[in-house]
Picture 1 (cartoon, rainbow, N blue to C red):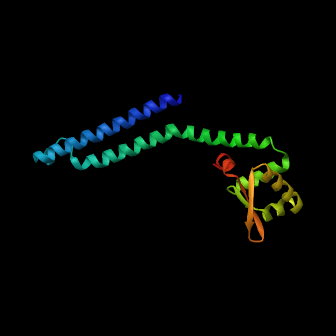
Picture 2: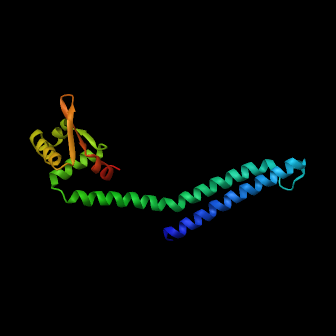
Picture 3: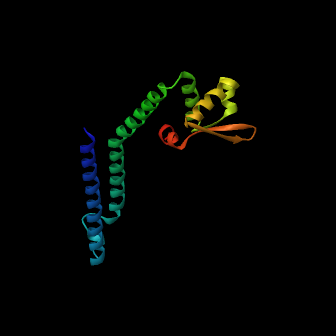
Length: 156
């Protein structure tokens, strides 16, 4: 089922739920104001749990219909990220993956432990010159972080 049909069904379902709750409220209010609340065919105390259950059902159904779309989008964005990283040289790709895995920030000392001090310095400097990452002093080391424009794309 395509997304447009799912959205139409969801809007109709939610509208039906809102109509039902509004009608039940009017029904209950009418019987309360007439003083016949105890003699109605549908007991008013049952309306609350009935519509609460119906609300949970509607919410679950909406989530079920949209969940596949949400997971498809997450998988697609991870695939797109890997495709983007494939255009980089292997060393830069590994460093950027580490930065992304750490939420867009990592200390240069951690990179040095994994890739070696000179190699990590050269890779970070190359990425910094191209504007992919920035460096700032962080105690005795540097904090390497993605540039804002790349952080939005790569980290989300």
